[in-house]
Image (cartoon, rainbow, N blue to C red; front, side, top):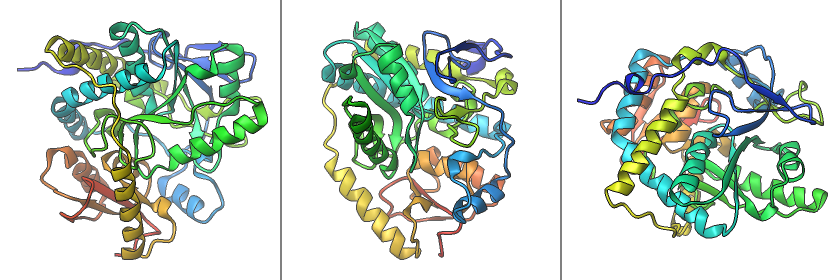
Length: 388
């Protein structure tokens, strides 16, 4: 019988935030990861949390942008932790193979040094393991930073300038990484932001978004399947104790975008365990004879499927703002963790990969239903836009 993951890899506590001030008034720090894993290009700030319902009201009334606020993040319940461990057991091999394939794709696309820029925070755990995979198994020089990109607000230009000017990385080495795509909003935001950056800074960067799975057909990935990526169902305790990124009045023009560092969650942090466990799973797959492919999938079928689904749901539920439709396990999980859901729709409610969604729905009294015709395992609709 497998031992408890935390018993296999006990974690040190991180009661203080390790900071290395830079010339910008942001900070370059590694959160609860090791220094060689990642450098977060974010400004740690203090921020009074806003109740989820009030945050939702402010967002949908147009009074505040979602990036200006955070709701209080809570530690997962014991039942939810058990479901995460089940998810890890079910999908550790698939995620390990996905990371190997993604590393092979990136290595084929970048012949020289590689600079990974993961999009905080869903891209961070993926970026950390990719960095080690490229270095350890592909013998490639790789550096990893994590920076902010925000829907409707763009990418953190100060962070890009730091990578290019202060750290001196070759623009041709830059690779943007995320965990998955949902509707493709962030991939499109990235493309638009980098076009704007090129016009203002005179530096052209490849806007391709590399991800483990590309549900929207907008990036480069080894898969377009809606499978349960274990890191997608956890928050700070699997992402270096860092919040999602923040852009409000506390962030000055010379600052990196902001974040909150949850030092109080350190005793329950699994960030390092997850990295070490995935690296071990990757080594096991290589030893067992798995050979990663450097060929990404054709994104066209996923793109057509995504566009058809969004159009259908806008009509079916009388939704005007497509941002209220969140397709896929990862996006649906985010809705149940930090938004106000109207409805959770599952393709198969008995599937173990959606057990955590049913648990969250039960904990938060969210209505759910089954639709076997769904092209994804799950879709969540945010309250205010769904009229079933």
